Amino acid sequence: MRILRSRGDLAALDELRGERPLVLVPTMGALHEGHLSLVRRGAVAGPVVVSIFVNPTQFGPGEDYAAYPRDLDRDLALLAPLAPAAVFVPEVATMYPRAGGVTVHPGRRAEGLCGAGRPGHFVGVLTVVAKLLGLVRPDVAVFGRKDAQQCLVIAEMVRDLMLPVRLVDAPTVREADGLAMSSRNRYLEGDARRRAGCLARALARAHGLIAGGERDTAAVVAAVTQVLGEADRVEYAAVRRLDDWSEPARLDGPTLLAVAARVGPARLIDNLVLDITGAGVAERPLLGAGDEA
Ligand code: AMP
Image (cartoon, rainbow, N blue to C red; front, side):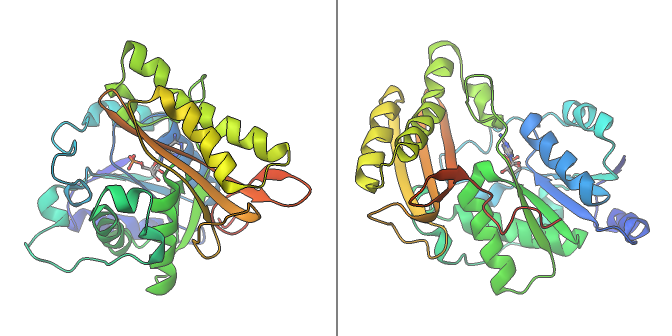
């Protein structure tokens, strides 16, 4: 497991470019089992480069950039048993060497949901992901389904800017009560930690209703919002068709059901990605058949 810090260090990756695809797993560190699952998923395809970089440009004013947990020694200890080929740990000055540089303007799928509540967030995400793809030049990049809109916005960039990389989305890894693992879960204590489970409970309620035949979007959103009442503030409970990002009045076809809520000091997100037919409902990947690697 090589630790690469500078652009020059990345030349070491050329030894890894061979018959098997080179795989990038971008993270902001404070690793947990969700991140490790992406590394394992990537390793099925080929040698894995994990990047650890807390990207300042995707945090808005008043968000938690300064407080975001950073513990490189712990992250490296968690990665060691998985033996990724390399870990890329750049400084901010390496990724952003000059002020006022080019940024990437997101496409349609940045509209609504987190795009509405976090202005500029996806510009920061796309800009750093484009830089990481340019620096590492992976054949495959793995992203978590937990950040569904982020994954879709990145897939749109790769498609529209014709970037030569294949994307894979990996399933959400959860705590025992269903809470999606997140680096921000460490902000949760006591009662807030218990109430944080309401996002997963709300999605489970929606899944149950849809499995029972409910196809009215407003009825499902109302039930989800009711369960989210345990949160301190609901930011959104949204339904979007995956094909054209429209808000359907009736549930049918590949659909994203996404929620965001504030619980104590943490802003939490979660979602379900569903294939809905007249006959039933099943979870599905966000991208293609989900087995692109
Ligand atoms: P982050 O470090 O939060 O920027 O996340 C890095 C990558 O890990 C992103 O692709 C996330 O979607 C993914 N990820 C974060 N949490 C989870 C989780 N609970 N399950 C699966 N993937 C996750």
